Amino acid sequence: MATVIPRWTILTAATALGLGLGGAALPADAGAQSAAPAASCMSLAPAADSVDAMLHLSLGSWRPVWDPTPTPGPSAAEREALTLALQELRAAITLPRELFIRLSSETPFEEGHDGPHPTRPMTPELKASFALTLHRDGRISDLEYEKGSISKPLDEALVAMLQRVDSTRTLENLAGSIGDDPVRLRLAVTTSPGPRQVAAPLVRLRLPVFRGTPAVHVSGRAPEYPEVARLAGVSDTVVMQFVVDTLGRVELGTAQVLAVRYRWFVQEVLRALPELRFRPMQVAGCPIRQVAIQPFVFSLR
Image (cartoon, rainbow, N blue to C red; front, side):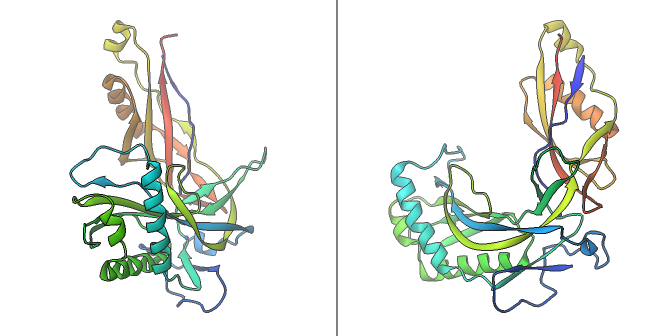
């Protein structure tokens, strides 16, 4: 017997919308990397409220470029060096006085909780993450945007900051403390930095709050129990991540296995994914793509 248990975690949002930092405004056409049509449902949805949020700049621990092993987190000495580097990065960034985002069915939302209400507060996820290689002389290379934000002006400000740091060799002191080999650094801008990251407040802003509901599984066959696993008497839980589109279907090309012990079970889950149907995430009455994490529990009990 295989049991499907939906257990959703985050993601999915974007007319041009100003996030107030006070002062001059950017041109109204500033927006995300992929602009939604002007008349899209989300662009016409009024916000129900707004909330204060603090945007943080965070810096992860380093690793040599030749070593792909994930690090468990910075040591005390590394944290001190990274904190100094973070201060240099913050001093080099110049944010526009107004950040504009573009809301569409593609924009990620963070999901809040406020008791037993049928709808939940949803705020656009303003987040960017990128990696770079830092050389012994303070030079930066191999900039890789892992996740662009929903604000083009924010991304442009981050790139300008890195160019300034590169040209002035601002991080040379940090590079000198980590040996002769180039190292890979991971940076992020987010309202909720990770617990292992060295982070510092960047700017306070107000985010719009919409009311919405997360995606809900409504139909589709459960995966078959693999016969080889049944004969071996083993159980397992396959944790999958995938995107649910605005029609409630799984975008198969986005499916990723996050956790599993026996590959037999993954094969059965992948066979079942095309038949799964969901009520898509709704934000202010608009269907939204949502990144979902869902466990598929296989048990012989």
